[in-house]
Image (cartoon, rainbow, N blue to C red; front, top):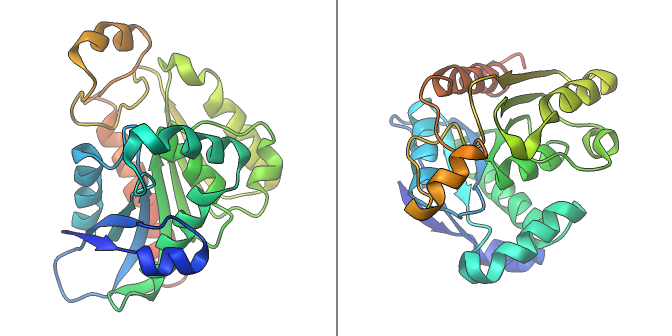
Length: 244
């Protein structure tokens, strides 16, 4: 598990000057299918690194790209969120750079998926039509022009929480759009779960935790195992299956 420097590739493509990411490598000789991971609004923190390590244990060469490489969350959060809302900008260039780097790695089979959580889930949904083979969207925000944004997307697995007050009705809307477009998908809303329910620890400031619980934000160890299994099954079908 190591931090990789993508700055040369990023600068050449017009992305972040100091782009980097956390690379989690499966055990064994490879090659392996790859997954680009996109972090939550908090950034590429210990939780995201643990998510990447988990995917590596499943057999995926996982690159958690740091969208805040040029200045950290304080300087980059607003511009990164604006990029997601527009559906274009430097963040998408950085994601594409990570995808290309991963696909060209000698440890990669060339098959590449994308996964995101929270803010990263919104990015993963929008990136699903950008040359990825499979996408996993976890409590990601939906764009206003949903069907247009999803047209031509790769197969999608999505997990949402029924107690997530920030994304009421998102799972049903996404299900409807993907069905209408004929995109292979599996969308599930977990009734007892909230936002960020796949996290294994509550990383929010202690003073905010009571408020966040009311808003339906935080880990749910009862719902998370099934959601992770859905992710593993989806990636195995579209990234590991030789006939996919």
